[in-house]
Length: 137
Image (tube, rainbow, N blue to C red; front, side):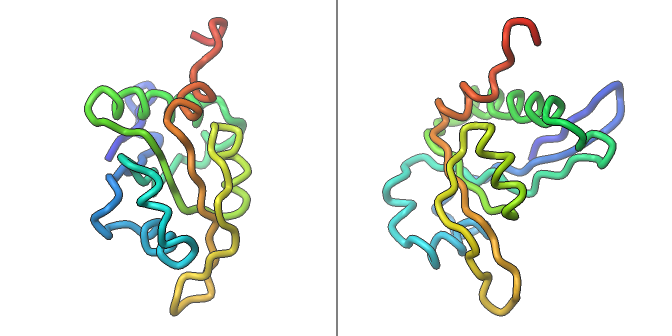
């Protein structure tokens, strides 16, 4: 679990979990949409439960910076090659700007009426998309 703080105020969190243990919603949904996905993506982690305070949801800059810092820290402590996640259709469009690809759309969670999009990103592509330009540093 990572927390984002700005000027001493907590502004968001994200949870990153290694896949293969059956702990995440993303794993459940992958089993429904593409049961072989995990075997194709060694050292994959679920990037999920992203929450950002409403006043910081305008634009992409704050989120991009938070995700960049999170990924940098994760890579310092774990061998990660792939990131996957489940999200709404609207958020899947945002994540595509950050190096992810849509791998499944409208995956129904059994026992509910909720549908999710599944996203995947190779770590190097995501890192490149999240790296701030020289002018932003």
